Image 1 (cartoon, rainbow, N blue to C red):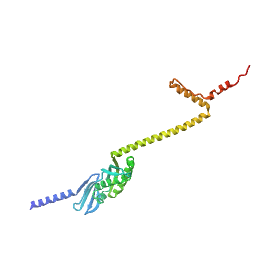
Image 2 (image 1 turned 90 degrees about the horizontal axis):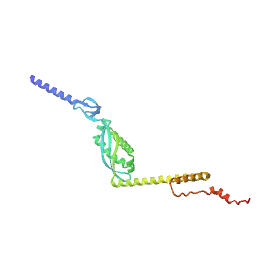
Image 3 (image 1 turned 90 degrees about the vertical axis):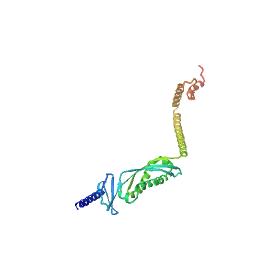
Length: 258
């Protein structure tokens, strides 16, 4: 009889120990427990030691750390009908464990699928040039759309970064030709603007020299110095008639007999 009592007591002790062990939950600092009581949401508990009543209560463990999701390459047709492959990386985390458990079945899979469709939808509204040159703005647009749609799931999309934009070889050559043509156009425009400015400066110089004949003579002397510095064997120096007018007038006067 004593042995039977001792054995029964041991069983009760073991059952109590098992019951206590199964009711203990330890949640780390970055974890929370969504507790349900008889199938109904009760509260979010943690971090630390949490006691769960077996059978009556159930706890779902949620990780609140930022998750990095690599969006696989997506086929995107831009607004100017160019087919490209684009992949990106999305940083998101759970901010409301209750919604992440109740409002969506598998929040990671749902967020990843939504990221892919949103990437194609947003980039398809832009042209290829914008896709290559305005990545920061496109990243912000995708992040804003994703964050608005995942808010109902208790998910916060913090960052979206476009990683690679793959273009086929034909489009690469076309872009190179376009860039070369653009550089040639700019060079011609700059050359034309330089010619215009030079012509304006020459016009002002001619007007100034016309008002001051002495300035024209100094210009001739400067030109002679420049030509002499080139060590030419023959120098042709234009001499204005105005300088010789005084001499010609003197010789043209008739001499008076003494």
